[in-house]
Structure formats: structure tokens, C-alpha cells
Amino acid sequence: MRTPPRRSPARAQAAPLRDGDLLAALDLGSNSFHMVVAQRVLGQLRVVDRLRETVRMAEGLDGFGGLAPDVRDRALACLERFGQRVAELPAPRIRAVATNTVRQLRAPERFLVPAEAALGHAIEVISGREEARLVYLGVAHAQPPKDGQLRLVIDIGGGSTECIIGSGFDPIERESLQAGCVASTRRFFANGKLSRKRWNAALTEVSAEFQQFASTYRNLGWDEAIGSSGTNKAIGEICAAMKLTKGAVTAEALPQLRDRLLQADRIEDIDLPGLSAERKPIIAGGLLVLEAVFAALGLQRMQVSKAALREGVLHDLAGRGGVDDPREVSVAALMQRYGVDAGQARRVEATAMRLFDQVAADWGLGADDRAMLARAARVHELGLAIAHSGYHVHGAYILEHSDIAGFSQQEQRVLAALVRTHRRGVPKSAFEMIPDRLLAATRRSAALLRLAVLLHRSHETDEMPLLRLRAAGEQLHLALDRAWLQARPLLRADLEGEPEDMLGLGLTLQLAAE
Image: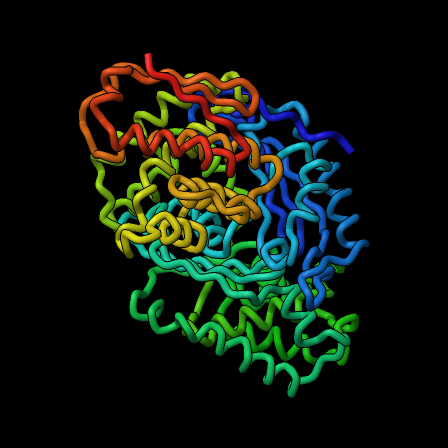
């Protein structure tokens, strides 16, 4: 396996996307791993290559959040092959996301560290609701919606099912349930036996899970329904092969598929026209989930899309770093929702950026680190909406546990860690959930945010006449204007205690007045 590329400022820099540039999106699903490579041509993304391998990660999950060694090895071997295809692409042009199975691992880093080594690139774990957003984005780009039209998208994966209602390219409602084709087959038909009694009991159980949001979705309504991913595609092909539809899935066709499937006593004996041998072992769980969705939402007809999560990741990647970056929109929404003082946020951000730019080269920090520090500066006072006492703790909790569009779970944890450590003492647990590849940059960014917040504690609007920061390894040297500092005794007192707190970040701080 290859060694992952070393972090450096050059690696994190993402030049503007130009015609001819290649992008790659990878979807580490619970059933299959997908990769799509596209080239930007005349401002559009044109797919030039696709790779897909059936890995069935969900089959390897045990009841304790562990992953079977043979399934782990199967996944790593696939990632190494995928990595060979994108070995020459720059890191900012590749995005790999992991979904439900990795979300359920008790210790995901035990899989992610060797997985990233095999692929040669970082892998982001995304929440179910973020997965739903990306699925909708992929379908919307593949089948552009009509103006003012509401669209329901249903994506049945290996480990989870996402249901989204959206308008245009924006999701309005997003839900994700742990009921996918692999997971549901294992859950209800683990011994391979099929029967109508077992099916009806399972259908009742799965339908109940969809009921928690069914009334909200029905009240909102939709103009058309679209299914995505392999299960919906396979069921649409079976409907066509049985001459029930021309490829759509309907409420009239589903019971006929189910009755035909249940003519078999065991999964290996299922005989459905148009069903591939690869899909046969998991079709029972997939059909069960789709029947439950149709019943809960009162669906009558669903078209099938060729696009899914990987296309959404691809288009999301193309928009990152620019005006279409959903993370910037999400941060602005958080500031508005929690009543953040925008003026103070701007001041802290500006100073944090001044400090960052002075030490970035020496500390090996890049554009991604700069953007994350800027976001943390904007939301560092988020927790004040709850209470002043311990507001950094409240803010970190909100950032780590909210569904924030555009952010992976690792990105949310980095953002939360920066906010958690921007004041007071630094607890040993503050960085325990940060991946090793991000740990050094996160600790160093935390130091910069601490200094920026401290320097603006009084909420002054005047710019500091002197602000010079130097970094040498784990040592920082901060120089401030002597007269300016002497006029601020409270700030002087705070700064005198800061070197002790910085030790919690593994850094030493020296102060000077000039």
C-alpha cells in the first residue's frame, strides 16, 4: 500500500477549476464502493470514467461496532485499486466519503487510517442527513427540476435509506433511517429463509420507522418522486422485465414483485426476471424497504435516476472553495440562528487571518486550515445563546452534534475543537476525536484562535498598531506595540497567563512589547 501524501501548504491549495481539469468523487457505501471521474468542459462536468465494486461493508458489522477482518481486507483492496486510478490527481480535486457502515463503527479510525493509506487520500465520514443532501444534489444535476416543482427523492443504500424533498437544487426536508438493502436482509432474513409471515412482520416494523416523518412529508407534498441507487434501479429493471412498467416503480407493481419473490422459500432460490446474480442476495431487504416507503408516504409512482451520492459529491466538490461552498452558507445560517455578534466575529476573524498568514509557511498550514479557522472565528461565540458561563463548551457541543450542511463529521469535530479550546484551560479530551492527520493543524489553529479572541476581548474596533507572530516548531513568539499594550492592563494580565494555557495545546508562547 502507498503512504498517504504528507500535508503541506501546496497540497491544500485548490486553484480555481479550469476547463480540462479532472475531478474524482468516491462513495464508500455499505453495499458498493463507487468512483466517478469527470472533466470540466465548457463549464460543465463530463464523466470520463466510472468504477464500481461490490464490497458489502455492512455484512461485516457485528453487534458491537466491529468490522470482520475479511470484509475490512476486501474494502482496503478495493480502495487500493481505486487509488491507482486517481494517483496523479491533486488532493483538492478528490473527495471520498464514507456512509452508514463507517458511521456505525465503534472505533472508525481503526478502519479509516489503513483505508486512507490504501487510497492515498483523506476519507470523510458524513452524517445521514448530509448524505441525503448530496444524494439530492446528484439527482438534481442529472435531472434538472422544473421551476417551482417539489421533488421527492428516495435513496435505498446498503445500510440506510435517505428521503429528501427539495426544490430546484436545494433540499427542504432531509431524513436518513438505518434501513438499507444489506442491513434489512441481514436483520430480517439472516438465515436465508423467506415466508409471507416473516415478510409481513418485517414490513410492519420497517414501516413504523418511516412513520416518524411521513406526515410532515405528506403535508408538504411533491410533484414527482425519483428513486436513486442500486436497489431502486434493480427494482425498476425487474418491473420492466415483468412488463409491469417501462422502468418506473408503481404501487400496483410492487405487490406483484413481492409475491413473485415470496414464491421462493430461500433467498438463493429467488427467481425474478431481470435480477442480477450480484443483487439477488440483498434484493429481499431492498424490496421490503421500498414497499414500506411506498406505504408510509402513500406513493403511487416513482421514476428511477441514474445519479446518486457519488454524482452529488462530484458537484459539491466542484463548488467548494467558491461562492457555491455550502459550508459558508451553513456558517452564516448558524450565526443568524444563534444571534452571533457579527461585528465581533469579523474582528476576531480578521486578526486570526493576520496571525495565520504570518505562520502558515513555517507551520505547514494550507488553504483548508485557513478556511476552517475563519469559520471557527465567526462562530466562536455561538454558545452565548445558551449561557455566558461555559459558552465555549455549549458552542462546541452545538457544532459537533448538529446536522450542518456541507460538513463531514471530521470537519464538524475540528470546528467544535477550535471553539471548545478558544478560551480557558484546554482539556485533554478536546482533541481525542480528531483524526491523526488533522491533529497538528487543529492544535496550531486553536492557538491562533485563542490569541485572536484574547486580543479582542474588549470588543474594540481600532486596529492594533503592531501584531507580529513567529513560529518555530512548537514555539510561538508574539510581539505587540508597547504603548498600545500598556494602555490595556486587563489585556496585559490575560496575556501573562496565556503561556500556561498554551501548554495544553503542546505549544510554548513568548510575549514581547516593542
